[in-house]
Image (cartoon, rainbow, N blue to C red; front, top):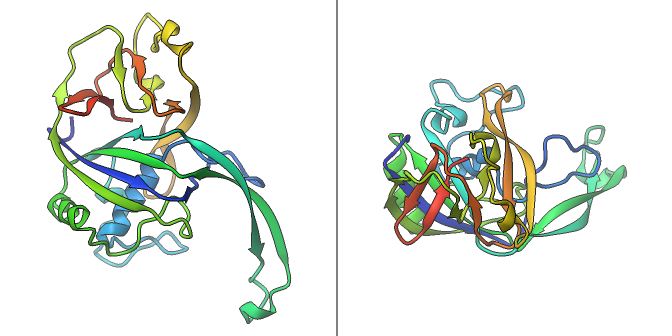
Length: 253
């Protein structure tokens, strides 16, 4: 694993939207935050500069996707409540051909799928020189930029839980996980999820972009299974599965 410990914190808010990459006119949302959206939120807390419209950042500054890369960072996501989705209409303004905002007349209403009252627990395994600073900022809610839930208008609040040891799992049979599961990373002759257990739960499986490069190309996708009521999932462990004291079993995406 990247680090022998995990930083644990909760993120929650009134609304959230993590746009699916394969939707256009009526944007749909992932059921949980994607790794790239979590890294973006943490980058805002640290004050890491985002790229401009030409995908450039300031000279001699480290890019967000270098600070949080597949080589030094991994996240696990645990829903802390029922995942609820609603549809809300947004008025989008065409400001490109107007010199003043008040003269804009071209408006298009687009219906967005939105998460209502989202609340998640995040487990971050991270090896970087900024880890101590991030820990301090999470503890004291000292954010450089306000964190948000996917869209800047949807602000997020955070609560630091602590830093805990990651304990490797040697079990090869089905065990309970509190987090979302990456079905693509479970290699077994048996079904990755206990079939009998599925009958007792409400699931959704979504294709997630898991490793975004600096040029925004996606290097790795995964089929992510999410339990929609915040309950546990009985699955076969893989190399990214760990136990955390008082937290149970988790799996990094």
